[in-house]
Image 1: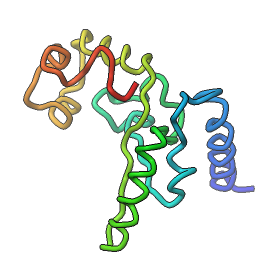
Image 2: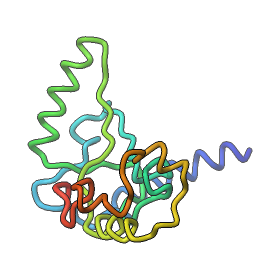
Image 3: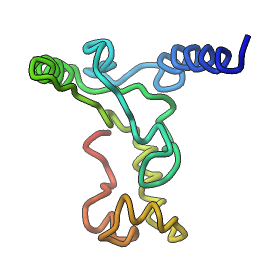
Amino acid sequence: MSWLSISILLRVLLRCFCRDTCLFSTIPTGFVYVSDIIPDIQISLRYASNENFMGHIVNGYLSNVSIITRAAAIGLKQAQLLAKDNGYELVIYDGYRPQKSVNQFMNWTQNLNDSQIKKNFYYPRINKEDAFKLGYIAEKSGHT
């Protein structure tokens, strides 16, 4: 078996395993997995990758699986249908956010040793220590 085949197999197995055990043993009441309601939607959780303002995977984001309220999922499903009718497609970049993720954001604002490249791309007009004060990061997220 080639390395590529092994890599793909491991990613598939990890995704299946993580969906039910790594993220949440039970999801919050009233929440659903986006892909259960909208199987064809694109999900690209930036905090589950290095492609975000912190430059690494954020605590609580163990795979590219998005959880949102059932009402939001139903609304997004309708929006996805409308978008597809017009040749477009929705992409989900975030969803439910565990408090431990928010706590890590708060701690991040205190670490002033950050890459200038990340700053230039993700927050060029502010100092990271001001992110909380300016409302970019909340102590309790609306996603939590």
